[in-house]
Length: 301
Ligand code: C5P
Image 1 (cartoon, rainbow, N blue to C red):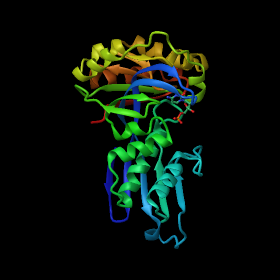
Image 2 (cartoon, rainbow, N blue to C red):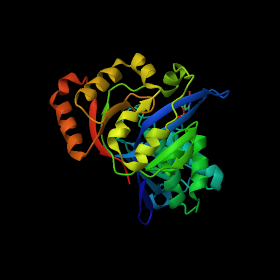
Image 3 (cartoon, rainbow, N blue to C red):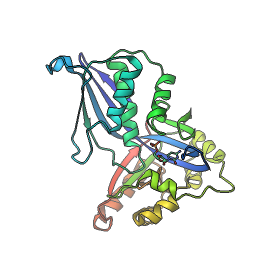
Image 4 (cartoon, rainbow, N blue to C red):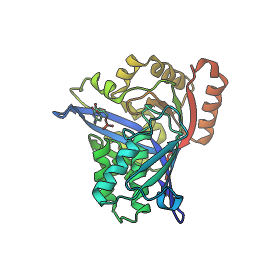
């Protein structure tokens, strides 16, 4: 994630992620699933700005978090993962000053792009800087894991092999930048609902081949190795996932897949020109997309 500091504020650009591979290995006693997944951060960002409230003339009340967001349907109350991240930082650091947060939401929600998790990671990182806490990456990874399974990844981005609930992160070097086209249906999917429907495979796929293809930057091989165990469940719950996936396949990219627990699907393209060609083809048939939104993105570096 990118960060910029001014005298009294910190601005953070929080990227979306896609999963190029997601295998379910086991159901755990705590209700979660043991995963093996390859995650890549991509150039679609929410923006967060953290301001010291004492500098904005808000009075001297203590421990107040004010979250404002340009997206009307997003809760800005204590249930928002950003506010929960602030409380976690306050508790860990023993800090009581008030903070103002502005969020410009660009990442589609409940879309398998981890926008909420990335915002939470940005909050940990942003407050670490704003309040000069001096926490290292391992500490941020540990706190992130308490907030959600996908939060830790953003401290290992731009690419990582993730296991456990997804919170055990092993950074991975991509052999080259990846060009993708995302297509996000207007209706999202509940992560919990999708996981409830999954069957743990008797012979899970190992992911060794896709890790090698990622390291070598072999896009055609990456395309052949794309895999998401959650996709059939998501297609049952949201037929648009299957429709859009078939539409992408028809345009001939290196591969296509649903990301995370959906509902976004993406095409993996061989170069930026191919990504633009696909996006143009999708946009020229807009009325057939059922309100789905198209984004041309690149892996972050
Ligand atoms: O960790 P997070 O809050 O993002 O997970 C949301 C839900 O997704 C969990 O409550 C759980 O039902 C499901 N989940 C799972 N196994 C994982 C990650 C998430 O079953 N590894």
